[in-house]
Amino acid sequence: MGLELLTQPDEGAPDAAALARRLSDQLRLLLVPHELRAEALAGPLSVAEPDIQKAMLAVLEDHRQSLLAAVDIVLDGDDLRYSLASRYVELKAHWIQLNVRVQYSNMVYGSADPVLIAEAGAVSFLLARIEHLVDAEYIRRINDLLLAPLDG
Image (cartoon, rainbow, N blue to C red; front, top):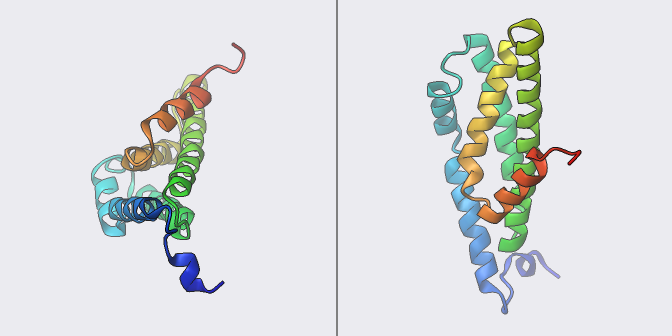
């Protein structure tokens, strides 16, 4: 089977390939590097020190590349939605852990590491940016899983 066969939509499911292209295009538009940086600097990173801003822009770039890599090769719309949702889960879980650390640092020490605060803001910014591309039911189920107490 040649590469051209792998890149052609199934005769029975041309909508799946079109959906994949549309979602991939939308994600790329949301993650244009210079726009992402400018909006992050004007938003969640606006109060951070310049060295922290620089570090967090690198973190955002790593997440941006990871998100794009997760969808680059996927040619099916359903698989692309699943791939994007799984990356959303990773980012959401990371954001939750950052927030737990920030909150406990505030409680125990009276303040939190500015890098943690900036990273939580940067990850939250990225989540908000891609959230509307993930199916609303997936978001609800992800939040139910990640935010529910484990003991009850």
